[in-house]
Length: 228
Image 1: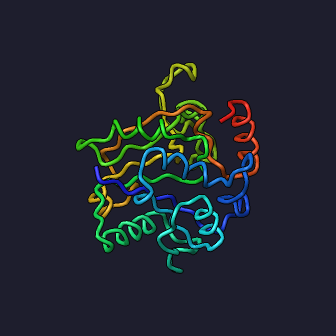
Image 2: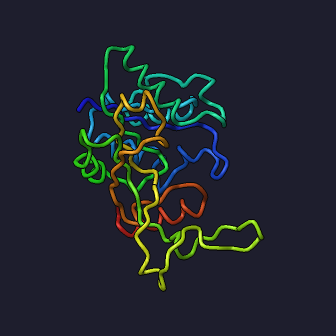
Image 3: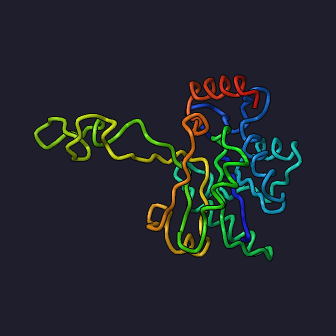
């Protein structure tokens, strides 16, 4: 495997302003992901892709070089992760390094650790296009999720004759923590178009994704409890 680890970190954030560098139990949020990546990979293949000079400064303060400031076109609210990933791949290829596997680690998953990454990597092989981390969803579409029909009445989002939630098939929710992606496949289609995808299951606790202040507070409580 020739890996390229990409940690996207845009400066703008609406739910929690400046959340990527906001302190979580005394450490910038992004440092949790950097520390996890460094426990598995060499610094030379870890790329924090950011459009923000302050984020760049924070990352470099923990000893990790930031190879570039993301182009303006990739720094807007409408810029997608797909384009950000392709830009990072092209940058490294132009520098003489040709990765075959992209590891996307989002900075908003502070409880994902090195062991999770290593376990997910064990599932990645030539039979799949991607391994993605998931958690079992509590919002099962057979039982609790509803859609409004053309008459304006609610009906189950997915049809099944199940009497209890426990009888329903398990349904998996992407938790955003780990994506292992075949680089050549990524060059020709978006992640949403992948069909050969394997899951790596994580616990609810480790799957916390920081989107609002309540997530920050919950992550802090878990970190304190586990002394992580």
